[in-house]
Length: 88
Image 1 (cartoon, helix red, strand yellow):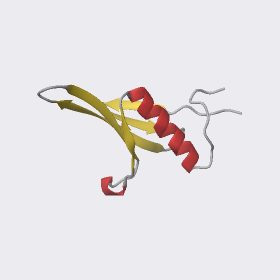
Image 2 (spheres, rainbow, N blue to C red):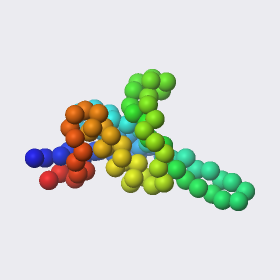
Image 3 (cartoon, rainbow, N blue to C red):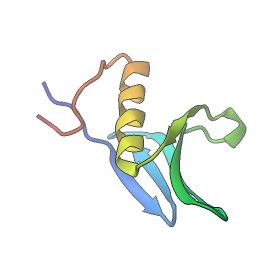
Image 4 (cartoon, rainbow, N blue to C red):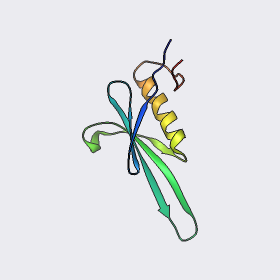
């Protein structure tokens, strides 16, 4: 059985996640520069043409975690079950 890996295209601090045919999600880097602590989160939302139709997947401390969880959620939502990211 083969599992397709997501394709990730980067545009500045935004990444588009694709399966082999369609857009899956958008991940954006969010930087907070505070007086006491700076931090970065990655926000993942489902892909829809209109931004108000997108659904929040979550906020993540790393890009790798955001891509992994986003891909797994997409697979579950499309009846493909949870599986590895890399092709077997």
